[in-house]
Image 1 (tube, each protein chain N blue to C red):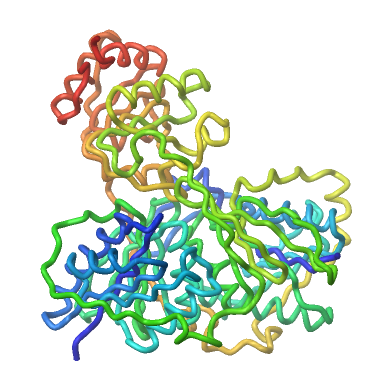
Image 2 (image 1 turned 180 degrees about the vertical axis):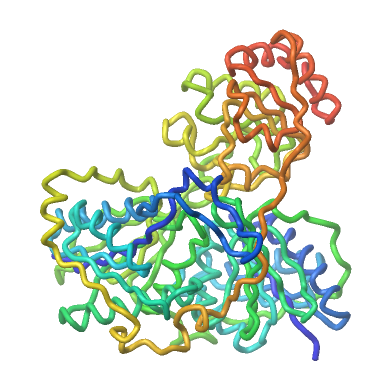
Amino acid sequence: MSKKIWVHAEVADGKLLNVTFELLSKAHELAEALGKDTVVETTLLGSELEEEARRLAEWGAETVYLVDDPDLQMYSPVTYVPVLAGLATSHGPDIWLFGATAVGSTLGPAVAARLKTGMAAHCVDLRINEGGKLSAYVPSFGGKVIGEILCPDRTPQMASVKPAIFVKKDPVPVKGRIEKQDLSAWKGKLGTGTLKPVNVVRRPPQGMPLNEAEVVVCGGFGVGSRENWQLLEELARYLNGATACTRPPVDEGWSGEYCMVGTSGQSIRPKVYIGFGISGATHHICGMNEAGVVISVNRDEEAPIFQVSDFRVAADVNSILPLLIEAVRPKT
Amino acid sequence: MPYNIAVCVKPVPDPKHYDRVTIDPVKKTITRAGIPTLINPPDKSAIEAALQLRERCGGSVVVISMAPPDGAEILREVLAMGADEAFLLSDRALGGADTLATSYTLLHGLKKIEAAKGFRFDIVLCGNETADGATAQVSSQLGEWLEYPHLWNVSALESKGTDGEGKETFLLRTKMENGYMEWTAQTPFVLGIARDMTKPRFTSVMGIMKAKNKPLTVWNRADLDTAEDTYLGLPGSPTQPGVIFSPDLKRSGELLTGTPEEIVGRITAILRASGVVTGG
């Protein structure tokens, strides 16, 4: 019998997220391992998404299950959970992947609970094992330990993956079709209760998005002050890169959680990572170890970050940062 | 109006010491000997949120945890922060639970409390994720088991006043990539509270004294009489653990030496060699 791998496609402001394509690329790899008759399909919920559904069908989704309705314009567990659980019950996917985004991190496990199946969270690798089951690799204890998670007896075998963990590859040529369903098909099955989404407020993007930047300038507690933090941002600007942080600068108020890298933040894979004043707690390393070249500046020669660095600078941040800014400042 | 509030908490090994977590090469199990246990940090934010609600509206704050017997110490700390009563669900039969089994166990703990008290919980709060497993799945799955609407990564919870029937409407915020989402809701609901939503209060000496006389009940598997074995512990968990290993992330680590000027010269050369444009 042919097997089905599903990817839940997610949109923000009406546009598909990168993580959806990263998951589609991985889904095709898994499909190859599962056998030739395995199909890759997607679920897509929202409002006025026919164009994005066509993009998915052209990109490598053999079927796009689209539920398009003004009532689905914003995410709500009251609508999204029963609709997705219903689609799975009708079509029986074997594997189902979700992006571990703000929405996917709550929608995925809620759907898993509805279907009484298992979900592996924040996977760093997905493979098909000898028994034809999904083998999901999940970090715990801040990435110090990686554990394999299996869902041997129930389906779908579900997994979530953070953006930028997998790589978006070339589209896979398929003749995808869109299977559009009406939200009215779920009449009486949607949740009740008074919870209502009111609006989505997005900050205008400040500079380069962190998980797309080729250079990331990352700061830790050793940066020392808000004034020095501005120097980090200046350096990132000159390098056409992005600024990131560990937990302490968020607690100090120098930086925001939105650019925190690690297990409770984002995962990044830039060409170059330059870390200043970062000790290298396992939680942080888990989010940056896919970087191409890692340069670390820390005055503590024993800092764990040096263990995972290609180039170590055992010096005070203040002795290096201003000089580096001068060296890369655009000449006018 | 007064609310019956439940807060789910988990004792976790102190995240500051995760570099000391090792894998026993023979037994292939995780060794965390000597690492102190504390309240999962985001759970403290949830406790604080619950205490603030009780201070504003009245009602009660009950804490519940599924943990080994020494979890009682952590619950005593939560009582010292100001919670009214604590319940520990502790039994070998509950061990090895994944998030579906954990949330199912918490459901039946909450049901048992509700039956004993003769009320329904209006608000159930969890921290949005735990420091050790960090799946962040339990609050959403508990919401599904309870059949309550649920939100995750909640960063604000404010009153918007009461409607004609005296029912309060809340304005909530959840964190999104580059922003947030706003919601309105009336109780009941389940929330996964973001670590920075509140600033957890410190425990006072008076709080510690009072906590000694507050009720702390321990229930085992048999006490959870409404729960079926199908969804309990490791046997009832749809996910099962396979191999575990410590990833080897070591890099060569060339030490750059010399004067600061020389070091900066090396860094810019490395940047250029990596295709990064500098000094445009």
